[in-house]
Amino acid sequence: MKILLAIVALASLTISFKEAKRAQSNANEIYFKVEVMQDGEVVKEKNDIITLEKKPFKFKLTYFKTKDIFVSASWGTYYYDYPDEKNIFECNDNSFFKDCRFVSIKTGNEEKFNANKDIYVGDDSYQNVWFYDESIDWYRMDEGVTVKNGVIHAEVTVENIYDMDKRDERKFQESEYNYKIGKIDQDIYMVFATEHYENGMEHPIELQREKFTLMFK
Image 1: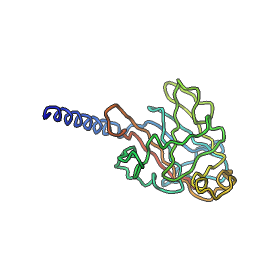
Image 2: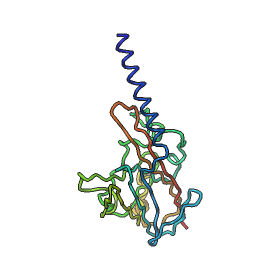
Image 3: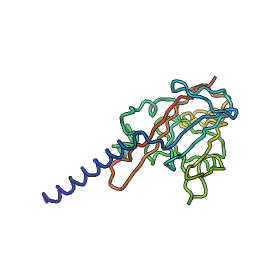
Image 4: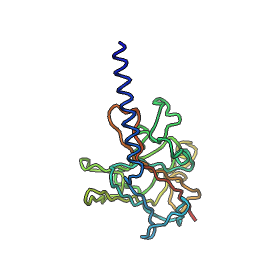
């Protein structure tokens, strides 16, 4: 029994060491890039803020060393204010997800090929994953994803806002929670991240996280 416990403890330490080593080695790696475009031009970020007109825009996505980007678009800062030094993929409550951020089971079911040209904006209950898999004949981004020299290029056009919080309150008409971008009257806090997971790991390892606020004028 003591030998078995020792083996289990050693295996756990080995996994933890591997996780820490991988996290350290990947700290400065660039796995993806997110840019925001409006009127065909990239809008520059200033002090973590991207200022847009109240009209359609696009997320321009480049996947260098990953095939999926976890996304939070929210009116609040539950994801946005998560400490940089902590793993945003760590979750120790698999029943109610208390204090958990990016957890696969929370992923929303967006339309294939971004048919409605919208983004879901919601509280800590919601997240999305913009992924690309050559073996699957659909994805969540705009139709027309390309792969060049192993790098994935995609876009997500935003013409409409789908307000998950208002929808969940069940006291608003659909036109009040599913509306054109021209009617937006709040900032959106955007968080993007990607991870790595292997069998035996307690949590996926966070590889990269990016965030900024979309402000509308």
